[in-house]
Length: 190
Image 1 (cartoon, rainbow, N blue to C red):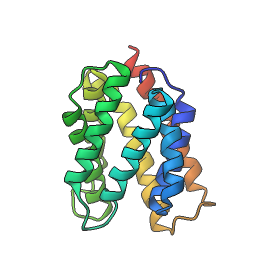
Image 2 (cartoon, rainbow, N blue to C red):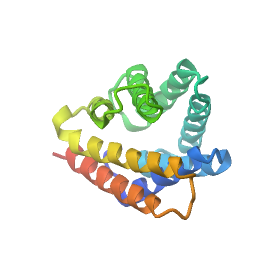
Image 3 (tube, rainbow, N blue to C red):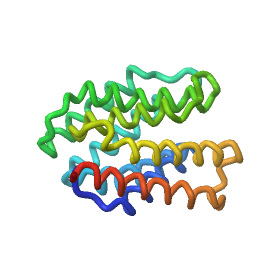
């Protein structure tokens, strides 16, 4: 969890976002398997279970406006329980899951013009998740959170333009995610 390749993780998260918005669930599962393995280094059996939980949480979150945040939190709690067992980290899985789904909520509200729309709120939600999960000061992970929020802005413009897999915005999104994960990796090793 504290040792990962930012290029690999950023590329796999970009692919996960792409497949999520295209509702290509089998491809999303494949991307999630790669992402969970690259980001957290769990054993293969735990990676497969973790990726399945991430898939299911995203599927219950995806419908708009009739999603199921409680089910998403329950599934992500199970994911964070698995992650804690695999890494020995000391976070509370319920709290981590709440923070995870909270940034999903903030992003969705901004996407649909229901919230403040400010990337500052999204950056703060991501920062809080990172600070809690990695037991670091919020200021340490603020740059990583800001880059990931910027990647989401690019992703949102890609979605608005029709989700074309050949759109060059995906390359920009991927680059921002790689930079975000490089910043996160540096922050957790300070």
